[in-house]
Length: 315
Image 1: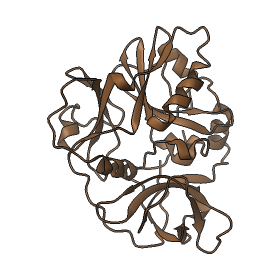
Image 2: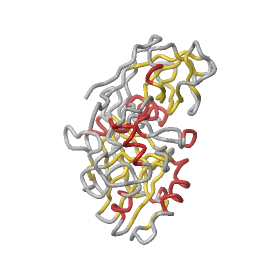
Image 3: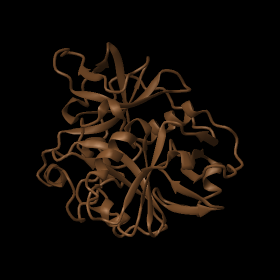
Image 4: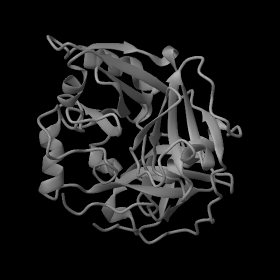
């Protein structure tokens, strides 16, 4: 595997480090899929393999429309053999639940909004490593005193985890971490969470999902699979996700332009958060060919930074 790293077109400040601690995650919601067919049902709907999912691993996955465009993204894992939880952006939960429910048909699976039944925390630093086996790679799942703990991609080397437990459970002992800092750390990982402003804007590879465990190319059919496979194996993919820095606020969904062409956008802001070092860090999905050009969003210059992971060249 290799990593495509663009040439920066503006100076990027040295990033701060995400502090250790625990942050509430009110921007996320939980869909429960319960029943004997819960995993096999999701296997036929999402981009990842849920049929072979065990109790020691989680999945990054996406729900697509028939054209291969992302409708939602999830961190999914089993709480038991007959219960799968999908953690997604809260602003997409209702339409996602409605769409998935349309395809249950005769499957023994019941879908519901379980957000109120659980509490979610983002753990960083020692707060994360204390609850996970040593050296846990991303998407490892552990159980700790009734809570489910998912190892996430690190932010600038700082370990991170998603903690989910039944409502009312005691939270892990950790310093409080501001939600704004957690959201900034999310951006720094380079792993995007889809939200309402960018629904149906991207096929998974435009967010590098095949390189961070979000797509399984060996599993059976699911909506949009043909488009995803064609993009991967016929070399038709022309857009990727990039990590960038801007001096001022960026709106999710805002268009990215080459500085010398204000008419035709070359990309779109996927996720953005204020950096404690100043300015804003963001993930943008844009044309690979534009990566070596001066870029702007609403007149603000963008500086491209190196992705924190390698991009897969082949499967």
